[in-house]
Length: 344
Image (cartoon, rainbow, N blue to C red; front, side):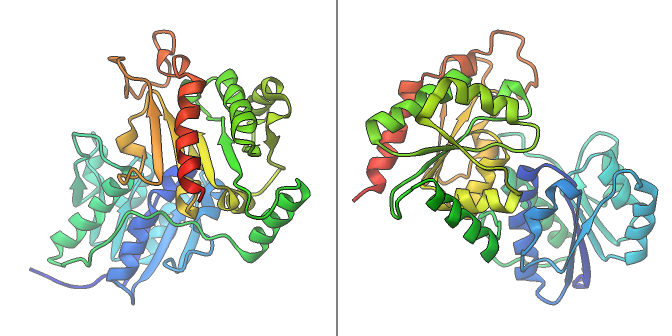
């Protein structure tokens, strides 16, 4: 069996900040196992910042979705030995299939699995997405008769000194004392079905401020102002909104927080990547898919007793009970236990 090491490798994960972050353990494992290989990453502009400053990548290629044919030519001209497609949708599969690479790995999805000579079945049971993506590398290595070094599932996001200074200055501008824990809330999501209620987040912020006497800051991103304002109108002065930031500046602020309470969204994965403990509120998605397998310091809460939990639907056919029934006092009890454990 051939054991030829790849000289040039392309990893594809075109979009979604969370999905890109969940691909970073695969990138790190590639560098650990092939330290002399050139590793490129193909991503759309909105998620490019996830990989900037990542020492395990040689080049970040910014994909232009308006010019797909030019990217087919560009990828083929690069003459990659391996292409690993972490997205495995029609567009990324076409790029992989036409790349000319001798090894093309992706997930075994209907029809598009023909693009890959290493087609990996997604696990039947729920599994952390970072672990599932690593299966692509493991299967690629096995096909080549290569043995991989042990790898872990830690996510990577590297903030710059300028971004860290931005976060430090903003904390000072809000009067947050050095060493005082700050709790971050991320009440937004592009899909309404995955959001906890605005009144729930508002009530929780009031409980944290009143009972724990801790400042609460709220995250938001592009096109999420309306979602944030709905929560702020109910929370009053119990919540301080983030300023308008870049993705890196947001990550640096999250990095300074003691706890992130979030919907199942991209900022939650940023918090995991920068080392901030998380408490995630799940409804239609399965915690095992999106929460790190180690419970500490990344906990989750989900209403129990509903037969439809983990349905993964984008629209609820019922009354959104999985989120509507989640009680602020119950969430606060978990927050209180986390913060008490943190304090001396």
